[in-house]
Image (tube, rainbow, N blue to C red; front, side, top):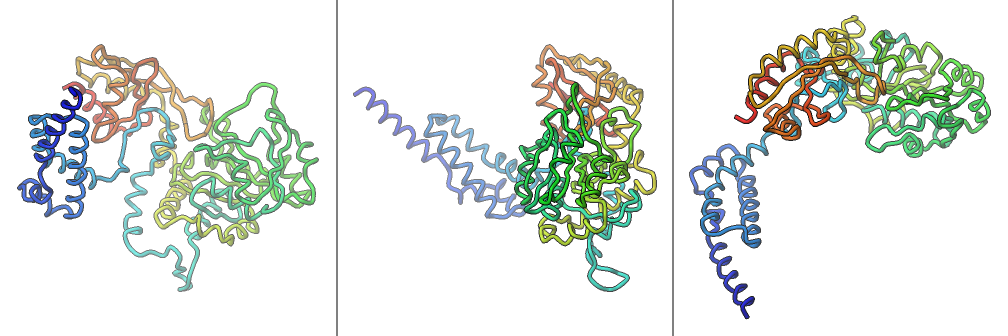
Length: 474
């Protein structure tokens, strides 16, 4: 009986609390809320009010309010509504400061685009343009023409095409040149390329048939020779950019495979991964295959990412022999994978920097990789001196940056790290605070210490990092 009586009293209390909830129409006459109707659609305001009132009803049902706390919560409705509306209006994709030292950070948008390139293309993308119009002939053209002549000059190859990412590039190559036929690949190159996408699965979806040769750690030319037969569509070599095998290993190179492919009348395709156009003297890129070298060594088709070491927009670039590129371009799948005017424009301007020999100065990824450690150290020292927050202990020490993005596994770039310690705040709390700023700052944590690597921070952002750290706990 007692329990039943308590439940009855609770129902009476809840009933009174429910009656204290204002109606939406009454709220719309609140001066703070009615003022918002001039800026935001009425439907959106009403939707958010109903959601907030539903949350209040749910909390009442869970015993989360008494009369006093409910009155206080109701008074907050206009201010909470304003915050919700501001959030609706703000884009979810926003700039962040990458202080991790990982240069090609997939979760942070990979390669940042040159600001000059972005500014130069505004007139093009904000107006009508000749994306698929041949101005000389006055007839329909092809969007590949806007970058093909440039990249073929840069790489001295016959032809080029582009689609929306590197996985798509490999997919359409396989679908065009080896649908229903065998694709020979070393077992050691059956990699997972991120996001749980695996080379065997891409092969399957393309309609090609996987033919593994060799072993995980050792594959010889004779393994490929034994596998080639009348059902072979192509030989595929995949750069294992996101891991490395050391020790008792053997890998068959492009020159040997090119000779075999040519003698059997089948194409050799090289999925080169990260898009390093030319050999680099940077130690961290020692294992990265250069696109130019692959082509010169005899690969018929090479595909790679546009938004990794190339430093351009997300895209999958296909270069090589004209007869194969022409067939790939005519594949109906290309229409589903093609790039738009924005990507086309950025890619063309990025390649222009390479053609003019300006890429190390103008392309952010190239600049970050080649940035001298002493320059990073000088900036780190200045940042440390500029942090006056007594709640944070700041020090600097040598460390390493990484190229990232599945390129150069194990490749490290000497850098100087700014280390943050605090007796008042945990490393997780500092990291979370930095991540919550108006311009989020993404740092890394090692051994319960927050690390800032300025190699991946644009110099003009150093003062933003200092300002936010000085504001911590204030």
